[in-house]
Length: 366
Ligand code: BMA
Image (cartoon, rainbow, N blue to C red; front, side, top):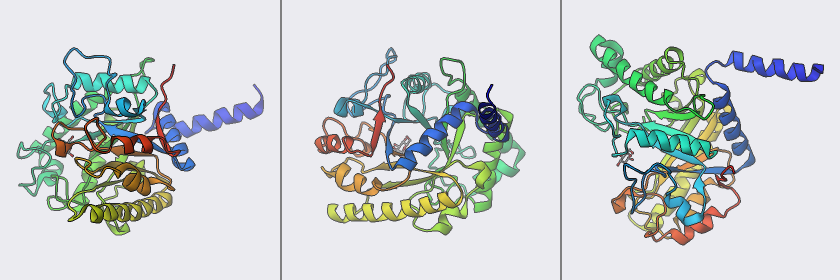
């Protein structure tokens, strides 16, 4: 072996040895995300893309995962597939949106084998009240998980079920599939039991570290890429307020929906202004901490603005350095879809958007 090759080999082995928190496949995914961010391109993602669309849903017997609203409009699958394991903690067969966990697993594996990237959120039920992730009626949920032995035990059991599911995601060679994991998002809203009004900053950080340590150290889930993701941050202090530390985070996220404006034009302007400023701040902080950035959730529910893709989203995301943008799901109710679909007014605009140089879709391996 020539010395130069030997040195490279030695160097790369030592990188892995120093970073036991990521296995080789996760490392490769991180490199791909990094390259994309550097190039100024953005991978396009869609939540639940292979599970249902605005006018179709999988039947129990569907196992080929060929249907996709995005594919039917532009001829490509999204590069990033978003999925959610909310209710895995209850041990049932369906997630919070009615998707079978068995089909979530199959879809994830199919997407990965096609060459795509996966991200999972976890809208965990409230472990104290038994309500949903949005149940903020009790203001000591995180405190109880951390300090009450009964709830601590219960929550670790939930993490075991979450880990079991992630361990079932294996590629053809039997290795764990890399997962961009985004738990406890939008902490700066009051929308979830881990949010602003129901837990302190310190408790949130402890919850994050507990989750991280339990999944990475106890369960050896070195395929996870950890994503810390607040909602529409416009301020560096807010962005760092619950930051668990560089050793516990790989990607810093930004999220924004176009909602609640008095007029359509005001909504468009506000969306573009907020997202450009928010993404700039997120990119600055990420650079200082040597992290990647992603636009982890985005959408205009119902997409009533026909040119939303080129006039809003494109204006926000071009000329930047982040890895991917994930459009939220195409739910059945008209106010609940954020991607394009055949019936929506924005179909032709989405086709234009998909042809932009910066947009990366999934080119399937042959
Ligand atoms: C939210 C909404 C909910 C859904 C949840 C998890 O943003 O779309 O309807 O249950 O995400 O997918």
